[in-house]
Structure formats: structure tokens, C-alpha cells
Length: 375
Image 1 (cartoon, helix red, strand yellow):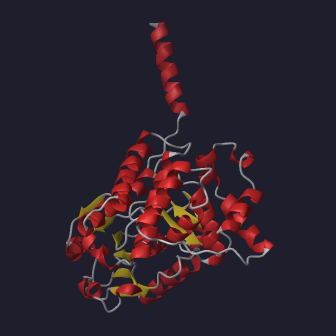
Image 2 (cartoon, helix red, strand yellow):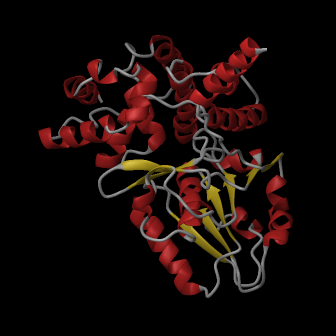
Image 3 (tube, one colour):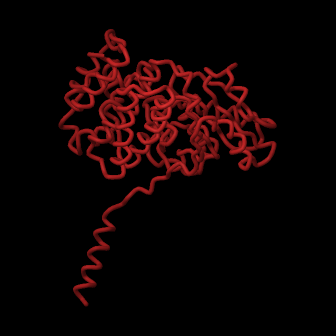
């Protein structure tokens, strides 16, 4: 009896040593062609009253297009068109929040983001900052948000980033590019309508799709990998191979890439990304290089870290006739390189996932400058 109790106490003690993160998931998702037309029906029960509007943040690509006419706005709802040419910034989030609070006496019933990763991250950040004090730059990091965001809905019009399902809203701030990573960031509702992907230009389709592919490679080869992340990552990788290496119909390609993005985003929940993302953050912060192409520019030169992944990437690039721009870093000063390197090396979790707890012994500023110089 005594031995049994000792074993029981020992098992409880062993379990207590592990502190597992209780991650949120998107609680509601609708998938299917034409499902965007049900958005009004989805939002209706969430409307508090006519003085509490829905704010629609929409990629300005759709200004004057059919989609604009399909947005289910009522009463004093507001549609704000935003350019996705630049990735979201903390100052932009703060300005939008200030505008919304100035325009309305009540908090909005919710925020709806319609667009690619830029608009989806922006909408998540705005939803959070409507209920939290200060500047959004104060919340760049992990689990710094204290108040629940207003109800928010994500409608992706391009697939790959996983922003529609992730618990982060990546922002460029005054001194860093880093996400608002919190349990309150995740969308309350996502609408996955493959019909919305038809307007995506080929190069953008490829670069954003490669963001998903690179997510998978970095997650599946990382030190943080576990069965949860692996199950999602492997499925996303299989889907990416189908989309970018096989000859699918346009409809099949749209649907499979949409689901690859979803699974790729989920694979990061209990894992992390790695070298390409850490270095692309430096490119984005200094030069404004957009996330998808930034990952591609870096990943091209990461054969020593991800040999199989880079070989597959080059095969996909050749199949679709994609030529990456060159000379992006050709005329940078020493100070410019130092800024990019500093931003990159500040991503501790990404480097630890890629190289292990002793990552500082395996990577240094000289190595990063060598890679950046090739871009």
C-alpha cells in the first residue's frame, strides 16, 4: 500500500513538471464555394445594436470590384479599404483604433478582416487594441494581452500565410517586427471561400503558397516538433506538393492550397518556424520586403539548414517559371546589415526551434551577413 502511494505521488510529481500550453483554436469555421455570401447571416446574431457597428477592413484591391458589393454592411457599419503593399505596422493599428473610437460612441460589435495575411493580421491587432490600453507595440511578444478582443472574423482571399488560424498578428514596430501572440488573437470565426482566390496574380500565389511550404519544412525539422504539430505539418506539406508539383485543376488547386494554409498555420501552434522566417523578418523590417517573397529570397540560400526542403523549393520554382529578384541587398551599408542581423537574432524561439538550445554557438552575425549578401 505504501509503495503504491509512493508511485502515485511520483507520477503526479512527474506530470506537474510539465507545463503544457492550453492553446485556443478558431471555434467556428465555414468552408465552401460561395460561403462568403453567408457572412451577413453569420454576423447578425453578433450585432449588439445599431450603434455598435461592424468594421470591415478590406484589401483595397477589391475597391470597386464585385466583392465590395457583397459585403453585408448594415446601419452605420464602416468599410475601410487598406493597401496591402506594406505589411501592417503598430502605428497603423494605433491610428485605426483611434479613428474607430473617434467615429463611434460604442465599441464595435466586431471587426472583419478581408484579404491576405496583411489584412488578416491587421484585423486581429485592431480587434485586440479596441479593448486594451496603450499602443500595440506594447503587446508585441508572447501572452502580454490582458483583455479579450472584440469579436473578429477572418476572410482570406489568398492562401498560404496561415494568418486565418494562427494566434499571432505580426506587426512591424519602431524597433522590431514581432507578433502579438496571445490567446485573444485567434479569430472567433473564419470564412473559407475558395472562390475568393481567383483574383490572385501568379507570382503572389506562388510566394504566399511558399510561405506555407516553408512553415512546414521549418516546423517538421525543428527541435520543438511533437505529434500534434507533426500531424498538421505533414498534411500541409503533402497538400503543398500536390498543388505545386502536380497538374491539378484550378478548382482543386484553390481548395487544396486553402486547406494547406489552414493546416500549416495549425502546425505552428505547438511548434515554431525557423531560419527563413527569422531572417525574412530582418528583410521586412529594414527594406519593407513582403513576407512571402522575403521567405523565398532567404530560403533559396538555406541548403545547409534544410537541404531536402530547398531542393523541393527549387523544383517548384522551376515548374512554375518563377524567377526571384536579385540584388536586394547589393547596396546596403554595414549599418543596414547590422540592423537586419539584430532583428533576426532577436527571434530566440525561432532559432532555438531551428538549431536547439545552444543555437548561439551555431549561428553568428558573420554567417547571417554572408547569407543576406547573396540576396
